[in-house]
Image (cartoon, rainbow, N blue to C red):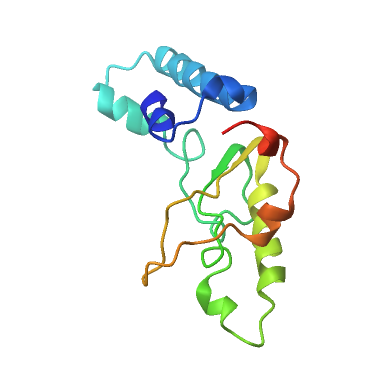
Length: 148
């Protein structure tokens, strides 16, 4: 966890809810390992612990529809991903409405914490940089004024 955020150059101390989510996750995982007091091998215990709905679920925004989670972490909030290029290039399709719909599906899955990432550096097949979805750009985020 620490290596992942260090690689992203994110100072966790600047984001208390993210730090709380991390602490909660690892404390809960440790409690479950102790509760199970299992005679299973460590890997088998971890696999059992992380089966849905007890642990981590990796899903698409389409697959998460109707589900609910304590914490939702979403990345790839980029035009061409949300919505997909096929929808954007369809003249009969309102890509901004689709983007809002998908963001609503993502955001409404979270019970406590919602973490949204629109990362830099990703490129399309023809090497054009992806852009952040217009809805993410338009929102007034608390961290928009933080020094980089």
